[in-house]
Image 1 (cartoon, protein in one colour):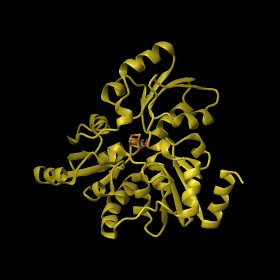
Image 2 (cartoon, protein in one colour; image 1 turned 60 degrees about the vertical axis):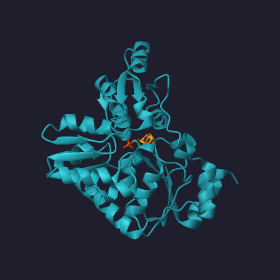
Image 3 (cartoon, protein in one colour; image 1 turned 120 degrees about the horizontal axis):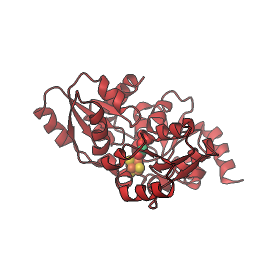
Length: 301
Ligand code: 13P
Ligand code: SF4
């Protein structure tokens, strides 16, 4: 039996479903039942009929799925696959901000640990952050952990007062204006599509800024036929699948999230066979982290 056949068989035997983020390897995306960005995957994770969720992504994604589905088994193909940004805030600073500012909402990007979610009022993803921040009654917003997404949302919500945190995504942070200019010189007709985790100066030179799904949808619907993609290179697989007649270029230093690339078909097979790498959370922590996630799902509806 091939790895794929064995995975399919075990999925049936164990009543399992595979979820994958667009940043994982193409061969993993091919095995997934659901592929999407963080917002789509958090919605999909609620209400699945299968008992076991194999989450092909980094740890905050599996954790969020477990927080929202305490009765299900969530397995991570590689337990070491983590998001550096998810740890770039701290509960002590959040407590201090709450003491400093009246009328403060702690808005937590879903790319964060369960511990940070517990200290927050609402979660957001890059796809729904603007809608949710606008919907909040609070004027003061402490946005954790990502400073780049925070600045992007702040620009579009002048009625709010933002307090910034210092976190960033090491993959998107390294996007260079000079490399994008070079790509533009080589492909002058290409539109620049950018993820809001990129630095402000990169967003400023972009034709479109949006989540991973937003970028893919934009490219699909656009009349243009060439695009410079400023996000993790895993999106190439879905872009080329949906738009076989369009051309997609990346910067010379292609952005790669090494943690997302740790997931392989063999590791999916291994956890399906063994049940290893199950996500577990202490119940009080889970319940407290569930509140901001549920609020996100309600406000984004
Ligand atoms: P989205 O899935 O919201 O586009 O976020 C990108 C990302 O960095 C996920 O880790
Ligand atoms: Fe985290 Fe960045 Fe990797 Fe997304 S791309 S998982 S934000 S390190």
